[in-house]
Length: 336
Image 1 (cartoon, rainbow, N blue to C red):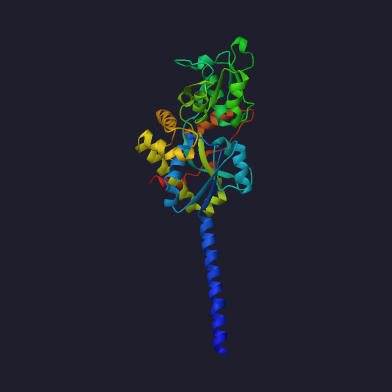
Image 2 (spheres, rainbow, N blue to C red):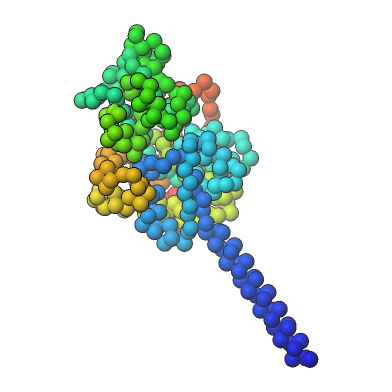
């Protein structure tokens, strides 16, 4: 009887240890799972996809899933609602989100120039901003970084924005949702639009327009796309956030140190609809304009330029400070 009792105690103890073990493993696994929500799916974010496809996240002990949204608002909703751990968005979204509970904070920068390209209905050689005079251009949604940057450089070029194209004004349309810009350009008869890769190249391949210069060539350096998360996540999951940023940084270093062909092959699994040659062209275009950050640390100087663009193109004025929304602690550790 005593033997049976001892066996029962042993079995119960073993079950308790097994359940505890499963719970421990489950919690550990969840700790290392990161749900990333990206504002859109674009070769512009190539270091991220290189890290994903080359196994750099796994090397850091992470299990990363990537979900694409239809704009920064949707990505921010995913973050604030808890359905995403980290978002890849324009930094303006973080500015607009201040004041919310557990406000989001930028912990790493991915791109440092506007990554969209001017697309024209006609093949214009030696394109300049003066070619926009008296035309209509679709430039993304109002309040988004693409539209604000475009407005900023048009005005800096001395052109007037308005609907009177007959008098030479530039009609900048900001009423088209981000995913619909390409199709609206094809059907609307507008002379210009701005598109990211791979959409721009695909539109040209279909005979619906011509890819001209990068907007980033005119706008210069500014924080354009960043990784952000809730302040509580940085406090509770600092190691995971650092491992995530390290993997992306390694993805950048791979692209920067390998040929465009090798980079294209690394990106191919994320862009099934594009040929290796198309991917090479896009990689070379972004490398040529120095679109990707060689360091994930956001400088205060670039932050100030972003705020200048936001406040010069918005009806509202924002006074958010650099230290309020940027935390370079992890980024500095990554580049040490």
